[in-house]
Image 1 (tube, rainbow, N blue to C red):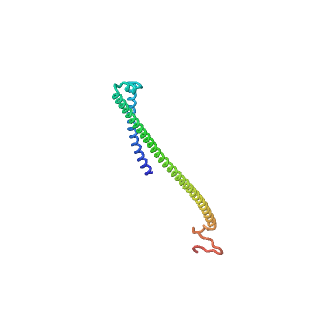
Image 2: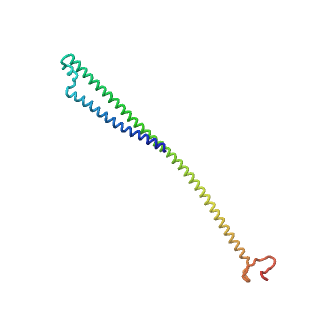
Image 3: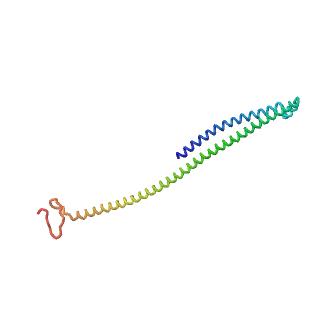
Length: 193
């Protein structure tokens, strides 16, 4: 469990780091995307859709035209480079988001595994508890049976004592000087005479 907690803390640290990087990259992409979009919209609004043709046709001479075509090509190349950078950053952003999802799934798996282990441990403890409780009840029943048996034996002994006392009392002679005497067969013996 401690190892899982340490792993979870490590992964959560990685996720936090990824969240910061994702937010930063998303902000950078949004800004650059806005700059490119705004520039393209501005160009279309100012010069119309045939800007390239109008610039080239407005050249004074061949050198001016070559310079304008070269300038347009550089702008186009620069736009293409920015678009490729933007696409690369978006791909990195998607990769970071998928990595974040993967790490979140790992954490979920760890929690599920831990919950499964806890569930199995709980079931094991419940089975042991049930077994101990059955054993306790069995021993309790055996003790109760022994106690009933002892009580029956005590009652039997008490009845025997009463029967003995009664039979002995019937044979005792309480007459005379207050001393008890046991009858003797075949003759008479006195206690002090």
